[in-house]
Image (cartoon, rainbow, N blue to C red; front, side, top):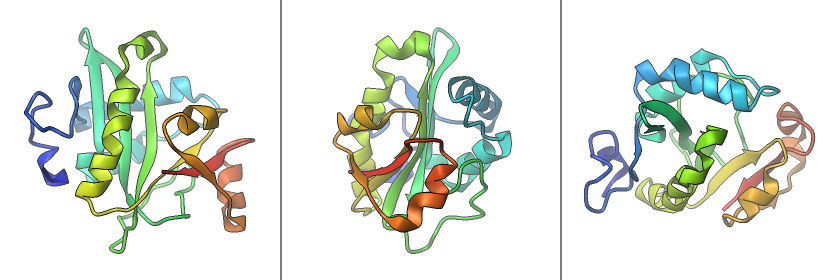
Length: 179
């Protein structure tokens, strides 16, 4: 199984990295995903252009899950460089040729759908995805008090002085975490 198979494979396919009910995000999903993200992360809004670019730059890392015909969750991740989280609400302009990290930009689940275990389904697949891309680590910015949640999934904080300015834009207490 390779990461290239994600955008064409059915979630129900045997050996799939893409877990049901997750499916590839389409451009038609971008506005709804952005609205959900901005509703949940009201103090850290991102433009629709950021969502659209992530979906275009690395389609295999843009997923949504639906429940009863409504968007229940989305996830955005892409190859990146360690210790360089992209600034909040910024366009990437491209992906690095020398990526060494799977960067989890965001995973958001509608609060009324959290009991479905959607986030866990995706998080358990992240190591498989990183391996398929030959990326030795996964990084994310834990914001809005989510560091303990990510610790529970095997992530640990990474301290580095060069991160302070970028992380400050993610709010008080934000930290880079790695698995």
